[in-house]
Image (cartoon, rainbow, N blue to C red; front, side, top):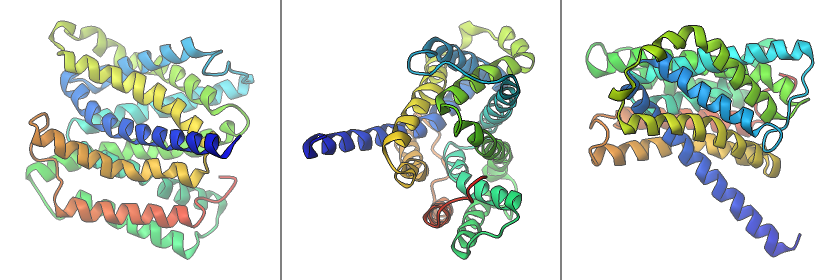
Length: 312
């Protein structure tokens, strides 16, 4: 590869990173719009999972390699599907009913800190001092966003939604740790795609009755477009982009995508609120800014120190 070609390839990868950050910010905004339009987290979770799982199955053998799992591994895929859809995606959308889009963007950015903490406990090791400081800063930022000292009003409502979001983040941490082992022996696209398909099946008992009972004629176009974004962009396109980035860039470079999500979501929410497409109060004041700085600083310290222990 010539230097000019390598430079163009790298610029293309950075452009892909920008698209991934934009897609992530859109996930929180469109997720809020989708759950408001459908007004039923279980129904929208199932609809999203069926759409994403169906597309992944159609792509099997082309963009997504065909699965080569042993019987015991298929049982683990079912477990990953349970974490991804009935737990993670449902809790995420359930929380978005009550909170603002910027909060989940910030809490999901805490994932590396959660992975480090759980992996260290599993390995019975103590994180490095820099990592310990990072976890402390991230925890302080999260507490600042939750504001447990404030009672009543919008903050109390957001806090109720944030509790669901934190459950979603915990399940994502568990999925990251558990599925990571199979992703090292199988193509990550196959693991993710078939976990999504399994999760859609497991979501049927919870979301099926709600989805069938919906009055589809009453759902606005914005609701259907938001569902399409969640199912096609978030669950399929971004997963494929993530794997391309990991194949060609160092993990610490790809991590910029996750670190940029809170700021990108805050900027997008501010623009949409100013345009009248979101409620004016998106919690973008000094308290949120301080919490965001603490969380991003904590994540940077953890990632800069090498991340979680190997073998986690």
